[in-house]
Length: 349
Ligand code: PEP
Ligand code: MN
Image 1 (tube, helix red, strand yellow):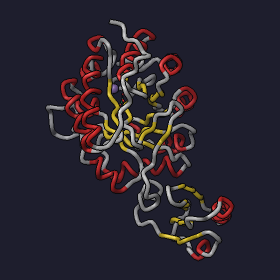
Image 2 (image 1 turned 90 degrees about the horizontal axis):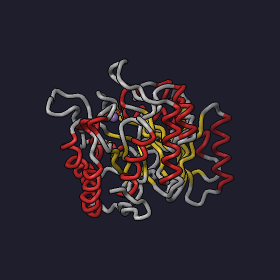
Image 3 (image 1 turned 90 degrees about the vertical axis):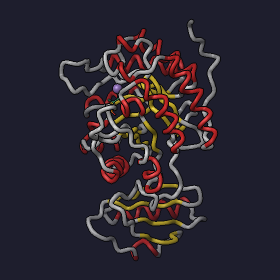
Image 4 (image 1 turned 180 degrees about the vertical axis):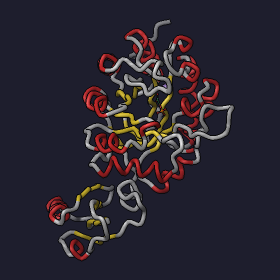
């Protein structure tokens, strides 16, 4: 259920409605919009009697939300959600968000070499896993907290916001402490315990689509995060498993407008995991921006042949420079700004 406040409703009136909802044993989620505030009501097992709230001061109307996902739906909030960060960057607004960096944090030299290049090219977010969910238990599992410390040093040095994955409750606690955005990976999209815990975290969440997830399952996973009070959620299409064998996964760009129709949450695209092959990353990045994605997350490594994970799909820094140059042109066509090249970050020849 959704309580829609009047345009001129006061803060006191909004608080009063929230208290009434809480007193009824339900949970209130005030979601301010451009025009007015909507208050989502969750926690009810059956229909709630709208009359309880309809007559409270400042209330315009009470609406039943028909979709199974409530807080993520456009019925709840018509305006696009914009997630804002301490360095001035945002996801979902008028700027294309670019998250770039290696698959995994391997060493100080490796992260700093990649960070310098992607910061120079204009990326405002740096990625790199300190905890790696790997198919093989014998493959590189990540540096753990030591990796998170290196990422925090990257933020300190280059001012990029840190996006890194939490794979379980223990790593979530540390990722929340060190990073600016918590990534929930494809394999964990339906790890409901982890989703609930990330929903209680104080940092924005990047939720990747599961390898076989339908649109509804994807949105329901986001609902878990929002239902716990975390409204700063960004979705990420990263390819799904199909019978195609020319590509690691099939990047489903059609989900971008599908999500945008149903949800106010921003959606970005990962052409690296979406394709698994370096030569496909640039063309699919162009396509992702053209289709209307709010951002890209791209793997970049200065020496991909030596990468401990996902070297085949990691771009060389020069290729990332080219990607940024081409994406700048396409972003213009869809009215998105792209941060300029940073001359304050010198790149060693
Ligand atoms: C990653 O971003 O390195 C990663 C493991 O992604 P995904 O969960 O999409 O496979
Ligand atoms: Mn990877």
